Length: 143
Image (cartoon, rainbow, N blue to C red; front, side):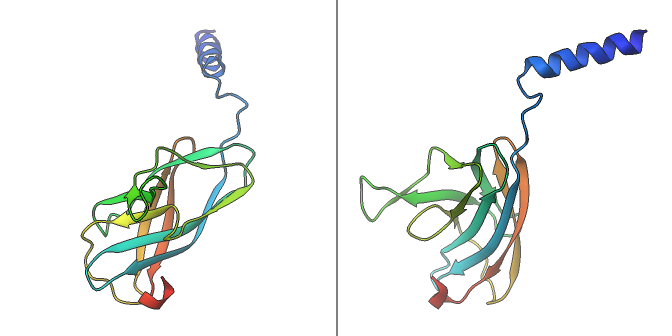
């Protein structure tokens, strides 16, 4: 009897949060590449597909192997500069393609990577949580 009461209380709390019945976004990450210039600056680019029925927001990206990183996008008000985006929404049934001219992951003071070297990343979403990804060091001409 006590177990049933506890289960009922937990289910009531779960539905009260609004999460019950809400599908978790289904995020797929592919096409990861890292472009690194001779001046040690680097950026990572991914293709992020939300194949679910719920929007999600990319809030952070990091690589345990490469140190500090930040999401960046061009500042439309100040051409030639970048800024940290307030939110990077990946709508349900849509694809976000990162690029130099758009959203990307700026890598601050990374080690020198060999062309073809693979690096692991974590992309963090507000609803889905952590999604693991891999990026390969590209040649400078891929930029």
